[in-house]
Length: 61
Image 1 (tube, rainbow, N blue to C red):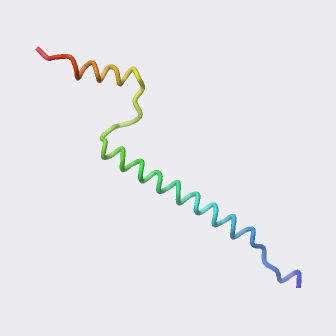
Image 2 (spheres, rainbow, N blue to C red):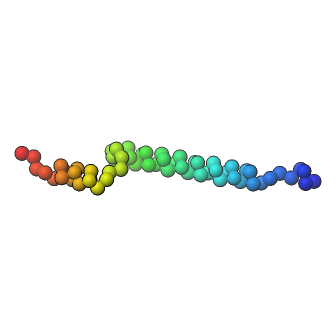
Image 3 (cartoon, one colour):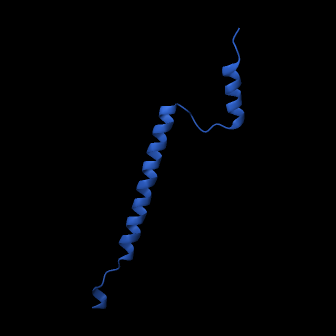
């Protein structure tokens, strides 16, 4: 009887791995959609933000 028993651990681990991968894919798609909608190329550091702010606020002559 013992040789006929199936392990439950492998399907549970496989389901957890696939669920984690699926969650990562959905987060990536959501992040890409937000980046596309906001038209931001990438994360900006403080120096770049300040430069953009100065350029936008400086009146043109």
